[in-house]
Image: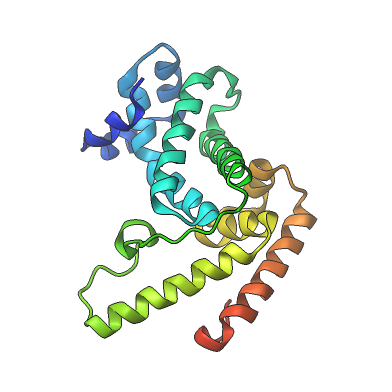
Length: 203
């Protein structure tokens, strides 16, 4: 199945929002590519964003997101609780991102990134100086994230950028809630220490 071909068929999001995960998964299990396309369209942006914050490279995030959906498509029968589709997908994405990081030995990523594409910054036009400052700020945030150890970066990304609950993070990561709270506290402290001089307090 050509998963990325699904991304070029627009207009399905509203329809997807009206359908239950259970119905879509049941249809996808029967080989209905349209159903899986709707799943893909619903979750592809948050999955790409999540992976990006883990690997810090836009092109790699898209590649690993594609692998996430390929793996999900091949393993739909392993999903036992359809109501937790998003948690299951994030779990697959987490594993794939970790595999990539380990295989590449935490190589240094130096890629120019459009704020509008992944970080979803404001779409209004800014001055050249403003765009330069935004770029420098994004680079500082990305650098600070990359310096967190893997567990802290994973928890911080899920909580701060994906706004997942502690219970959801526990399901995605397999961590206990006390560990999640501790890692999140330490991650915020590290981010505050690194970015505080530029941003003030990080809440």
